[in-house]
Amino acid sequence: MPQQSATSMRDSLYLSEDPNETTFKYDQQLPKLPVPTIQQSVFKLLDSIKPIATDDKAYRETEQKALNFLQDPNVNELQELLKKRARNEKNWLEQWWLEFAYLRSRKPLIPYSNMAAPLPIMKYWPIVNRTDPDFERTRSQRAALSTYFQLCFWRMLRHEQMRPMIHKGVPWSMNQFRYLFNTVRRPGEPKDELVSWFKTINEGQPESVEVIVIYRGYIFAIKPITMIGNQQACILSAPQIERQLRHIEEYCRARPMGPGLGSLTTNERSVWKEARDELCRVSEGNKKLLHRIESALSVLVLDDSEPTGTDEIFKLSMCGRSTDRWADKSITSIAFKNGTFGANADHTPYDGFCTGIMTHYLMTSVEECDGRWSEAMGSSSNSSWASYSDPELLDFQLSPQTKNSIHESIQHFNGVCSTIDLIHRTFPHYGKAILKERRLHPEAFVQCAIHAAYYRQHKRMAPAYVTASTRRFYNGRTETCRSCYPEMKTFAEYLAGENFTDKPKMAYELLRKSVNRFQQIMDEASSGHGCDRHLMGLYLTAMLEEKKIPDLFEDELVLRTNNYILSTSCAGYWNVCGGVPPLVEDGYGCFYGIEDNAITFGCTAYKTCRDTNLGQFYNNLQQVLLDMQKILLEAKL
Image (cartoon, rainbow, N blue to C red; front, top):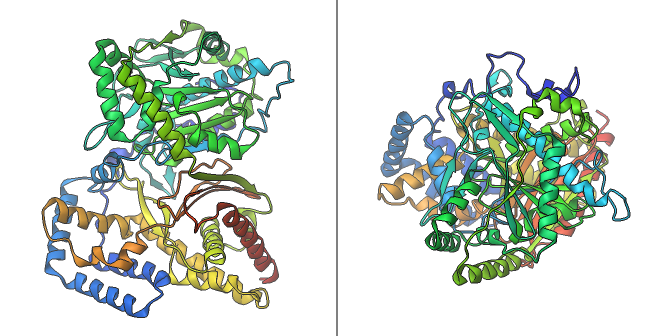
């Protein structure tokens, strides 16, 4: 691994000091995912229904269905079948979640499913103006250095040198990191297929050490890594990678726009499956080129847009030119013309913390070298052993049918993206430092603000999804923390009143009760005792075993509370923050990164819904956070 300094902050954060503490060391030892009791899940479900039920009669009817559900012998039979599955599998949910939450969906990956984010690196790599003498070179220089550090991250994973994550003494699953590189979601019918070629050094030679570069509708493969045997992966120096990127830029600028084959990957999955089959029918060469793209390490996009801030970077990362995307690949880095960066990542194989951690690794690397390559970095990583080769154009044979499909896919993508509204802003007034003093959990606090902002705008509570991690279990991913509960509603209603500052201690106590309840629900969800995945398991068991679907699953209030108007997640305790569109048309996506003295938000909504207004929602969110700060200060505790 390259050592940028004797006391590298990056290496102290990510490199394991003990050679026995390998990255995936604990994964096979982690406990099985538990199956909650029916009673636990039903009571949690009812608790999340209470705040949205405006009709007492309707709630009582739902409550009666829930009681019948508890006493139904058929439901008990489903529970026993689910428990049997859990005894036979280390994670009873893993394959179901992958299949039914992701692979069976026919919606386009971009923009609906893939995660998008700006790279908040402008402190070290500020926006370059066209008048700057280095304008034409800046993108390729920065993209080369960023790619170099990304490949260092890959090598760290391959050599299992990244320290395993241990939270409060409990090891967490690292399995999702296996899917960051050399991974693709291949279109299929009726479901897609997730394929990964990633291997650690103990598992064998890597399938591919190529990076796919897409620019102006052309697709290239570069080879920035030379393997010496199975053990040694030598990475080209950043200047050598820059030379490859400059070669691509010069080639593409001297020609008309390329065919834009990547647009096909942004269409509905069944449409892309048919188009991919057509590509393969045309020639064996096309099949081989597809395999090279799909098995490659990652994708780098060179984008000629010049975004002026994180708002624009966020939008372009989610809804940029479809001709310069390959939606199926697990990670795509986007380098814009003016030296800014974004990313787009397939959500299917892993959750946002993986890309967040890699982004933080890249940012720390850039910070420590002041954004510039030094020869010392190359010598410490054996760059001199890496063999340089010019980029290779991946030149597909396209039938008239494929060319027509590309045109239709471009039109479809542009139409879909025109419906999405995005905001990416940093709230600069305070962060988690002030909350530590009062022992208020930062994420719980932000959740209270989100719900209060929604209530002020819409005069009602909204069913809400918050990501809870179940990575303490074997191949664990997520559970839903339902943050719409009675204490949350009480606080949101109080904060919407005109005189909420008259009794700051009362406001503070309502806030504290809501925060404490959130922590309880989050802890239970992270411990495998949320209700969403369990109820999903019971439903799927009934469906797959051809049993009667219990009436509770068809109840109107149950369906409403499962319709997550607020889809939210904490990106971490840093300024790395991206997002996805809302889960429902009348919803908001609200994702956040919490620092000591700031909170960064990535918010989304659909323009097609008359009931939502993203600008108003974010303004309310800012004002609510200021009001909550006032409560903290005036309570004088």
